[in-house]
Length: 185
Image (tube, rainbow, N blue to C red; front, side, top):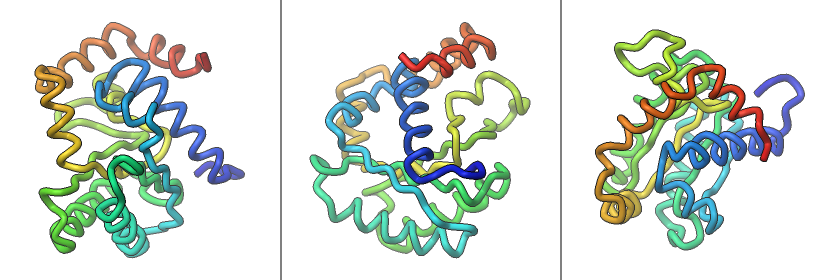
């Protein structure tokens, strides 16, 4: 979290990213529905490291498990105070995935990863391809497997999403992406 950022500012920046990049560029065709239905829970974590993350994430994973999907279908667990370094974030993601197993939630829930420095294996740090998973803060996106299954059934070309995203981002380029994100319409 940048100096002076409040929880509300962190959530506002995350919502802007979600509506402009993820939904606006159709990087995830499944996101619009849960956004419109207000089924996304935004959590700003106080975690400063892996130990804090595990405690807070345990509570959030259980809350998602125990809440009806019509109320909360997915959670954006935002960690503005920790994991600014992408390597540290990946280490934390490893522990988050292990936590899913330890809680017996693997197969019911999964975690998708977003980070300001996100970098796919085999890419250069500033390759535009990485921007499909770049977010304003480190985010652990908690998803229900059943919701993913329903979305994939409704979107038969789900396996093509990654390639379409790369095409979209390459067509925009860095300048186009930056301009798109600055637009508040």
